[in-house]
Image (cartoon, rainbow, N blue to C red):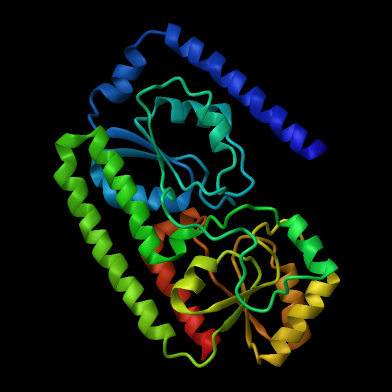
Amino acid sequence: MKKYVSKKRYLLCSVFIMMIMLFISAGCSGDLDVDSQGSDDRISVCTSFYTMYDFAGKIGGDKIRLTNIIPSGTEPHHWEPSPKDILAIEKADVFIFNGAGMEPWVEKILGSIRNEDLVVVETSKGIELLKGGHSHGNEQEDGEENVEAEDHDSAEYDPHVWLNPLMAKKQMEAIKDALVKVDPANADYYQKNYDDNAEKLDALDKEYREALSKTTKKDIVVGHKAFGYLCEAYGIRQNAVEGLNSEFEPTPAKMAEIVKFIRDNDIKIIFTDGMSNPKVANTIAREVGAQTFVLNPLGRLTDEDIKLGKDYFFVMRENLEALKKALE
């Protein structure tokens, strides 16, 4: 409770400081805005975290000035915006976020924004969401140990919709529609970029369907319960060591349950997400003689990853290769 209150106070203080900064900036000469934006007729777009940034860049191309609020390599679930971040959203033409609980700070921040022309895009809106307690595989519905674990993992919905390429296509469409609304003069440009990427997403979906329909095994064990949409799309069962909130470690009873499941089903690979602490997954892997591989939920990529040319499509194909190996 104390942690929650301190976070709430921090956020309120951040909003207050942001309002002071806005007041000060409003009293300054307009020369700065002219110098920084007057010669640039691109629209200003802010995104909440890497995946939204990548999607917006694919649709907006060189017609937008794109700013990602959460720094690259930062785990997005527990991040909090600074006054500078709030000000960047305030000054943008478009703000794009995932929703479904991925960015718990957004609702409070948007309530403080004075820019009435800001177009806000919640890309998961209209997508059928999986409940936070939704599971694939061996998790029991009753028992004290599972109730305790569920109390720790209180997310209402699974926010990782982009891991299903066809849902990612809907998210890109929402971004395209917003850019067209704000910048109708470049509507054809945004539409073409969307059409090109929609075709790529359809091809990616086909690759997943064809490859995973041929596997004999259908169960995977993951450290972080982030792959519900991917698993549901392609007939895979996700068995998670930790819940949607990877901040809490599993109970000893849950650990024993997972170890037994791995041995009973001859699981050779345990997936970590490359972001949260892999300690628990590594401990289980040593116990059962399994390997650990990364299955990347694309919540973040490092600057080095991006420089190497990694993006949504690259990482999703890396994920597919990892899944094929785990299910062979």
